[in-house]
Length: 234
Image (cartoon, rainbow, N blue to C red; front, side, top):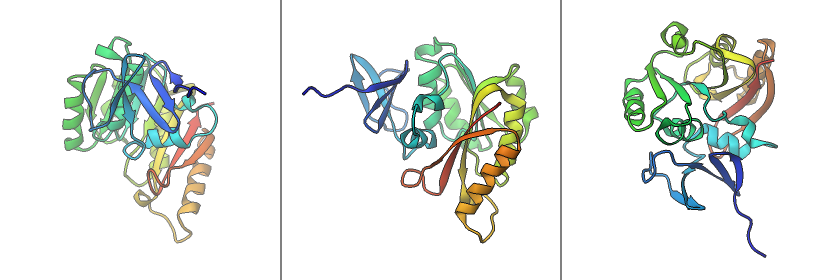
């Protein structure tokens, strides 16, 4: 029996078993040493779930994995953008080659070193807008989002992540929009009740703050001590 080919998640993302590939917007180049492979003559990059919390969440998600991903051509917000691993794959998904799909990624990070890497990435991937700012300082980056958006992700290593996430979601997210919170236990001030109790408390805080929590994904084994909270704005 012939083996089945990869399953299409979006126009630019494929799922092959537990491996995710995105259509390379800059053909012939890797961003962080990831493998490249052609499917039906089109070059894709392997999205490493040990290097990206969003990729880890996609691997662990139940049901329709594509609901975690933004649509092509959208404007999205990424708080705590880091060095650009996940950003590069999001660019594949929403911007495409030479930015021709029209997407924009507002990439906010507090680290000058991360901003250098993001600026370098943006020089070959139009549509990425790096901003050096604290994720809590909406006045520093909010002007880049004149309209509410349908997708955001927060991955910051600061205490009070849930409160920060709720404020950004209520300011920026449109009704029905998806917001993902990548939360690392070690970044929070938590009691002796344990890590599990912390994650339960965060879920309750998000629900009480007005978000619908659709799924909480345990990323252990790919991203240890992390949960990805998949939420939606009513």
